Image (cartoon, rainbow, N blue to C red; front, side):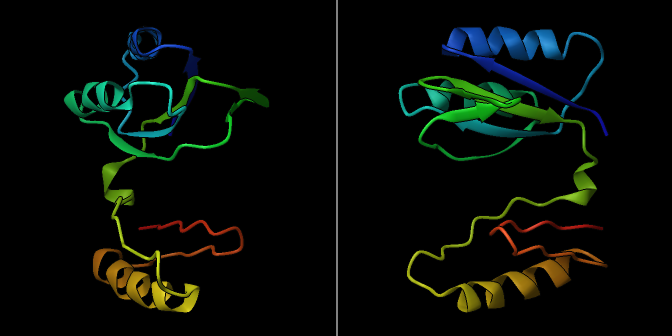
Amino acid sequence: MKAKTIKANSTEAIIKEIDTATSDDFKPTLAIVFPSIKQDFKTVSNILDKRNIAIFGATTAGEFIDGDIEEGSIVMMLLDMNPAYFILEFLEISHETTFESAKKTGPFSKKNFCQPFFDNSNGWRVYRW
């Protein structure tokens, strides 16, 4: 698996960074994206969708990448991970406890993966084939 990190302070600039990152036969399948609410994420999302790149991300109080903290920018990690090794699924959990949320996640993962793996130590869920 190969990964590249990119960042920019505008929608136009992040699109150029995506173009540059993929100009050498790098074909990412997943983008982990942290955009500022000041940026036009819908346009960035559409660009990634057109390239068949799945998107996982969230807004934060500052965008972080490669040890730097940005403000008002878009940062992302592009990965060429085998799509069979991950599924992005939105599960509504806002009014539930962690235990109730896990009860939803477990059966979903067992249905979709032979050997699912979970790491809840930091609130992250990681799936493995």
